[in-house]
Length: 262
Image 1 (cartoon, helix red, strand yellow):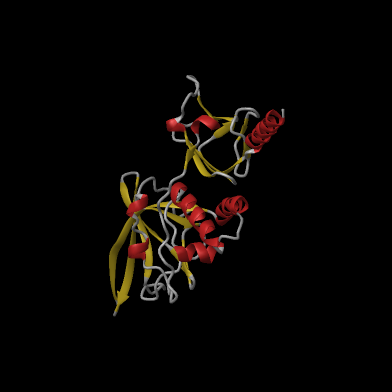
Image 2 (image 1 turned 135 degrees about the horizontal axis):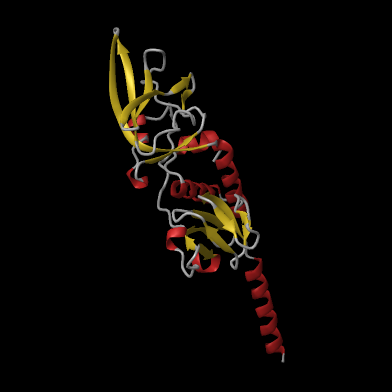
């Protein structure tokens, strides 16, 4: 009798734990509807394993985090057991653990600025670079920034190659929504220098810009902090880096630390 009672209690506790498991949404690509409410999914929403999501686009994606299990993704293109007339995914059948292998490079104790040639080249992310909107991007002092020395982007618009000067302050380059409103593909980062009155332009790197605002990323980082806590800072940084790498693109260790305090 005691064994049966103990076993029953164990089952009840296990079921309670499973039912209490929550997955907190950290990233959404496209329009995704939570089926039980009929409302669009939002960053920070808590989901159960039995919840169903309706994806409006086949390219849609949702990333979420479980305090006890880690980071997970659901890709609309890989839905299992969905309906025929809509891209419907039940969490428990479609959650795939995130397995990012990206690691930040070791931070330099004598950091003076980023080298655009190496920073904007990232083969592991297919050249996707995360840029924080209107946050100064610090470059090495060998690149002068004034009226005659500046960075610019080149990319095609309606079949024609266009040139767009990157605004800057004394703190660094500023990537804005206006600057990156039209490119649908890769852009070329260029630098114009002036030596003895002679202007010279050179192409430095080609990449896919992924622009996000600071508040958007900060909210996602706070969710990850809540899930993992802040006692193990190395683990926290690894999880944040993996999340950003998978859903946006490369961000350097100095930028992550300077802008977000990670």
